[in-house]
Image 1 (cartoon, helix red, strand yellow):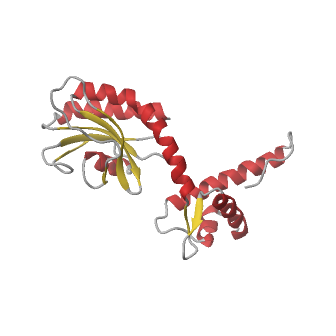
Image 2 (tube, rainbow, N blue to C red):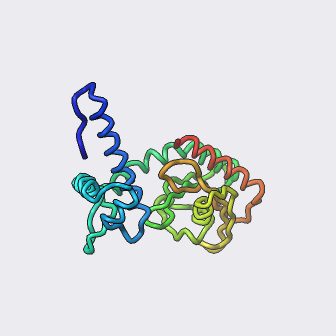
Image 3 (cartoon, rainbow, N blue to C red):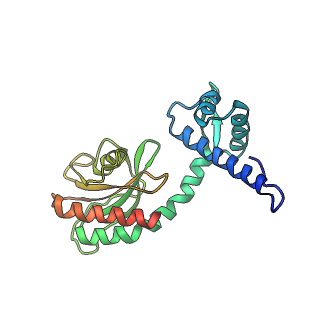
Length: 221
């Protein structure tokens, strides 16, 4: 991307900011295109010329943020995954206080689930301290978004629905889950939920899960 000009040159500074904005918008466009984008498609959506897109692609490819597939379509590069993995510990750390409260309130294993590669991934898990039995839920566990309360809550959140979602025996026989989406955090698709070995009071636990999801969102903004 273009470098900043001499100090005190507002025109040059404005051009650099505009280039950065375009580069970030291009990354978002490619991320939202499952089949990738051509340079022409990217130029049309950004409202800029193909030459400008080629310059952005060159810089972002050099940093590993974009790549060209066998058909020349733009796709996210491994550099984006590297940044995402570096950010995950920060997300987990920010969510832990709310997860601890939730686990103790509900007497069930609490978790923060995020979207990665089209699946739900358990990024942080907290078990209650006072129960005799609880679900052992492994950090890093993956599951389809269409199965389990955590994934279903994320899908509901895509349409702005913040209501808690409950499921039974979808990911594991005899396991019950309640989850709510984490909304209002730019660039993050996630949910907060609990899983237990016995049926949950959906109304009471749903309110606790919803409050925890809102607390996580506030901590991560």
